[in-house]
Image (cartoon, rainbow, N blue to C red):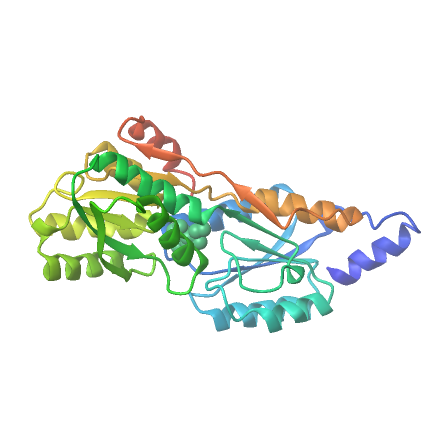
Length: 317
Ligand code: GZL
């Protein structure tokens, strides 16, 4: 706790404040459990804290920004040593981040970014969300090889940095290829249930025979859409090509079954690099880079998706 850390620091005289990870108490404001990937991130974050002997105070916001702001204020009042947050949307954080800064509590962003002054957080551990979208677009360009393709898009949570950036990246990926056209685009809020409902509305509005491909901002919405495509009497992965992001086990299974075509991996372990940066900062003031980027890897039917499914299925998704 902050008090203990301060006492410890004073005991160590004028040496840099050497704080042992085992003394740390860190607050973690998690968005919720909207997707398999999010559930895996929660599991891995708890594991990463435990193996470092860090006390993790976990708060599930159930997709609501006001709950995350409440959680951060509670962590500040408790005097935690640091805060991890996966911010549900990109805006509206300045005030509470200022309060954390005033309390000298470092904040690390996980998997999403915020539209706030970079001085208000220590670092952000995320993938390159624009790049992920671009890889998805470029894959479809290559897959269609010049043939016309009417695309429907399932966007992530409105106002979230992945929804904004993955949309922009995909449009960059298909730019200059007029044979590819996005004809419908709507949020499925990163969930399977909404992915299915919105895909049903796309099929009804466009006619399944007029939809060539689905780009979903995450695998969970794609898996929901696969159900809708099947119920419409069409073959997902064949009649409608499907590319998404996260590389959760069920996406690898769908690709292995020929019901999906490509996914781009997002590691659920954002907490490892985040806690390493925090430990160094709290120990001797080492400032990390403002962005710690995690890698993005494309998986297609060329990969051994069944083996990858079996390797990933027990990792907390
Ligand atoms: C992206 C992350 C997204 C995942 C979804 O960095 O914020 O949120 O792609 C999750 O599965 O809902």
